[in-house]
Length: 91
Image 1: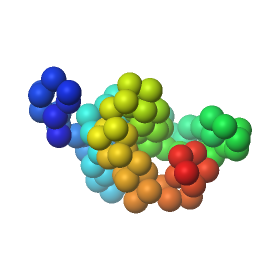
Image 2: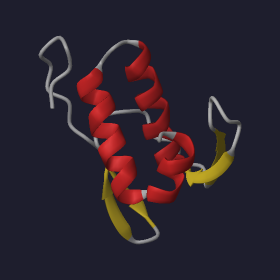
Image 3: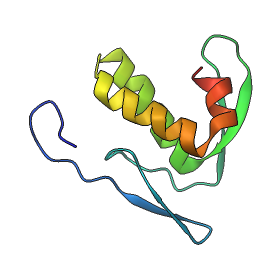
């Protein structure tokens, strides 16, 4: 993946309880356990691992900067790995 300046970005791999998870894009990864996030509109809350909170934050930031390719990568990743939390936070 490349950013809007043409720089190649390498996604990170997270080791989560012995399972390797490839992040959808290069972003800062929170290493804490679970983080509770509230839906921006409904206020409904759900818990996600720290690395998923990193993806969520990047999705929201990409939306505000109209970086729709990054946003789409994050949304697809969230649907794949955290479908229930996706429905609460991003659907």
